[in-house]
Amino acid sequence: MLPFLNELKEEIYAIADFWESRMTDRENDGFYGRIDFNNNTKKNADKGAVLNARILWAFSAAFRFDKTQTTYLDMAERAYNYISDYFLDPEYGGAYWALDFKGNPKETRKQIYAQSFVIYAFAEYFKISRDTSAKDSAIALFRLIEEHSFDKDNNGYLEAFGRNWGAQEDMRLSEKDMNEKKTMNTHLHIIEAYTNLYSIWKNEKLKNKIINLLNIFEEHFINKNNWHLHLFFDEYWNLKSRNISYGHDIEASWLLLDAANTTNNDDIIEKYKHFAINIANIASEALDTDGGLWNEYDFEHKKLIQEKHWWPQAEALAGFANAWQLSKDKKFLDRLYNSWEFINKHIKDHKNGEWFWGIDKNYLLLKEDKSGMWKCPYHNLRACILTYEKLYYTIIKDSIYNIK
Image (cartoon, rainbow, N blue to C red):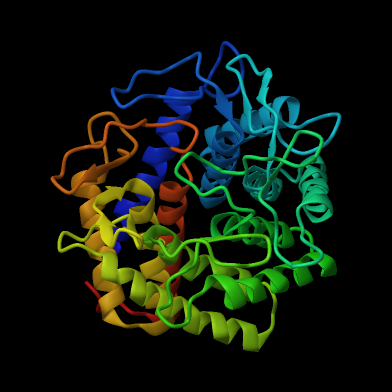
């Protein structure tokens, strides 16, 4: 196991170093918006809120992992200042969805998914900087979400709003998503953000909101008949899709338990430990013989989407490490090792750095961005940190040295 831990540690540095060396925009401030499949930097590409928040989170987390890497602290400060100066709306509050390459607002809608990632990142940055402005801004965003997005009549959170928090006709995160008012994906990242915020701000209302979100997941999103997660609902909680996202399944398995642990409620924690193992188990049905995790299952057309993207592979590391830590069942450790072998063989770009977007069923690379609006140092760097820490902690705590 120790050689595996060393590989994870080296990968943390490699990912962070790629983003520092390749994405820093020294002409227009902040970070570039895109590097294409051929590793060409697109200096005039738009800059997304999700990308920049994930960059901030990643460098903050990397510095917290290893405080000798002072460059990561510098990059985190750069990311924080850029988001604060350019993305935060000084008139209506909240973060714009996208800027042009010079930092001018381009898409000003208030997507709750993006607000959540800014909270998540600001909280992480506060942990390394103790900058109270980051904490205050995260709290202000939390209050905006609760004021405008929380559905007081039906519970849950609505997807998106205009710049002034008015109604938004198109609420989709991307073209492939359904235009529905409530999604599992956004709720997952709200609870993720709230959990990180609670780690620096022990507010009772925030804690109750985390508990409420856990109840929402149990009631609406987690299908206890098969342990997959439902994805799309209307505002009245009528289910609109039966498609399966295996990456979100395995991500939710550990992330929801992380949220449950903040409650200090033994019943909730034990419940979500049980959920974590069951969800990790069912997500494993999408594992191919090569160790890679298929993306999705299209319920309507009864077919597997035979692509393996980078982020479900990353979440498989964290999810299987978590399931093994909970259960000590060796099958999860085997799945973890196999996932890492698949990433090493097919997803990591050993020549140019970072991870490829993914491969198709014939092992051909998908010609998608190396970095961009959605391709960020978040899933992969986080998975390496979480997996390293979970395994290292378990080795030290339980003295399990007889595992290969």
